[in-house]
Length: 126
Image (cartoon, rainbow, N blue to C red):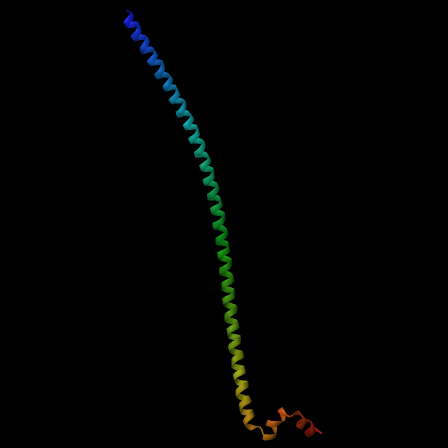
């Protein structure tokens, strides 16, 4: 009888120890679950914040890209107009130079010297 009582007592202590371990593990699982849910919630909030920032940045970049495209197009049109104007001015300057060369051929010796000696021009007018 005494042997059975000791066996029962040992089994009861073992049962109590296993129940304590089970309660401890359940508490740990509960704590880990709460921590995981909290961490997941924080990570989800951070992900949403980063996604919103990304969307704002992308929208800003697209807007700036469109504006820069418009500016580049405007610059290109202005460059074309400037090139056309410069070509026209070059053509006029070429005509002026060719006319000046023709004029130089038709000048007399005295007309060729007068611009370099202003006193001759003054005497001539008097």
